[in-house]
Length: 171
Image (cartoon, one colour):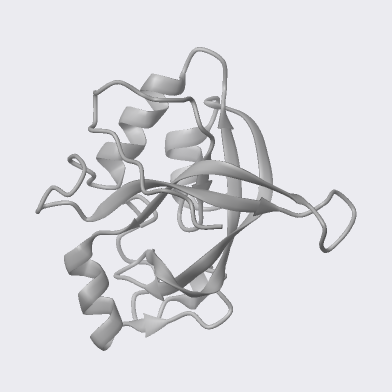
């Protein structure tokens, strides 16, 4: 089942308080987790984004649609901070609104798989916000990007960018 593409403009009405799937510097233990998420989450669980590929960027990764799986974390916003968190992440990811030509990422709704607790498979799927590379970035990645074959980003995944640009979203 393919989830519908759903986006909302920054600062616009939010259809639902969906959790967020993160796969880069927003992961626990990475620099932007502490900067943007500390005290703003009520729960964090390992998760997998199916039908996606992961590419290295300049200090951070990009996920795009594809025939693979991206490993990350599902985050649930703490009570009372959802709007603040959504705004922070939109700015961090340079999401200016659905389809905006200057977007670095698009915020879309996708089905994310949660492994069963204590088991490698057989979990549930939930709808979540995911920041995928915007159209122009995706075209560039498909023609000349560096694919992360296992779909699991770490700082050591960076090729030639180690230590540079710790800011940024899935960056």
